[in-house]
Amino acid sequence: MAVAVDVRLPTVLRPQAGGQSTVTVKGSTIGDVLRELVSEFPGMSGQLLNEDGSLHRFVNVYVNDDDVRYLESLDTPVKEGDEVSLLPAVAGG
Amino acid sequence: MALHRSSLDLIGDTPLVEVSELSSNPAARLFVKLEGQNPGGSVKDRVALAMVEDAEKAGVLRPGEPGQVLLEPSSGNTGIGLALVCRVKGYHLKVVLPESVSPERRQLLGVWGAEIIESPGSEGSNGAVRVAQALAAVHPEWVFLYQYANPANPRAHYSQTGPEIWRDCPEVTHLVAGLGTTGTLLGAGRYLKERNPAVQVWAVEPPAGEIVDGLRSLDEGYIPPIFEELGGSELLDRKTVVRPRESIEWVRRLADVGIFAGLSTGAAMAGAARCATQLGDGEQAAIVVISADGGWKYLSSGAWTGDIDDVAERARSTIYF
Image (tube, rainbow over all chains, first blue to last red):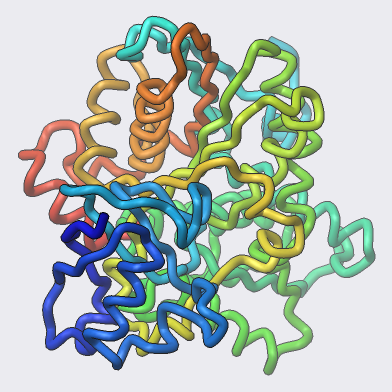
């Protein structure tokens, strides 16, 4: 069942969402949430998902701070109250 | 204690301390490996020495020959470790350092005589990598060890850090460490999984991408080449982001048990605590946390004594991993 979740956007994606740092979108999985995000903010197209629908290699997506690549990736379910955050992959060390 | 002939011989073989009193789950024991005990003060001493010795073996660096220059991008600890090794061995080091690192990192590089080349703070470590790559391209005479792509980095942890953990805590069920170059988890994690495939490897990272506002698009992202070449995403079982406030709360708790550790250790402890709360019914765990460095370099942040909201806010704009 689709629920509304808050998605925290990194600085680099905010211009595509009219400057907002958090947006609310609906979905039942992370894949739904990202597709909904792209349809609402077409400027993010190509930054979040590849043409084949897979996750862009330089974006990390977290549900309640856990990276979804190590959960069920785009099939990771989301539930009411979950917080999704997007972060660009950057260097550390 | 044994007599050592060189400070470089003190690198590695760090102590493991049980801190289970900080565990909220009695079924989860917690252990911290104190990498701050290395002579340069961090886990990166291992990587620095391994990369330099590897280059010496390959003939890229020639011990005793004057005028040899090394170049390295670093947010601090690798630069400091390399500066120590280079000072002792007589090489000149240039470190590309983001402007946004803590002042203590800059001072420590000065202690060991390294030359600092600044990269824009708004670009974070990505900027340091970019500047160093550009300099390396125009100065092929400089030795560019490049920790993010140098197999000697994870190898140091495969050959030392991992075996030390296995020797001191063979009951280990989880390894938790910060993810920077990814070398620690790739090396020590792989070693432990080879000994016991049931060992879980958890990565903790700061929300660095949140503050790096110098990125123009996500296409300017960065994944360390060693992580992709060595199958990092298959090796890790979990990756979790820890925000500055929680990292600070955990360094304060560590102080309660007499451990003075840096902010990335606080983040790793927060990751271990999450891990402890997610154990199944009847599951027992021995969670080993890598403490990358001691608290010395973070004193100016006020992490232990300042108002936590103020400290957390300041930490958001400082690189501490």
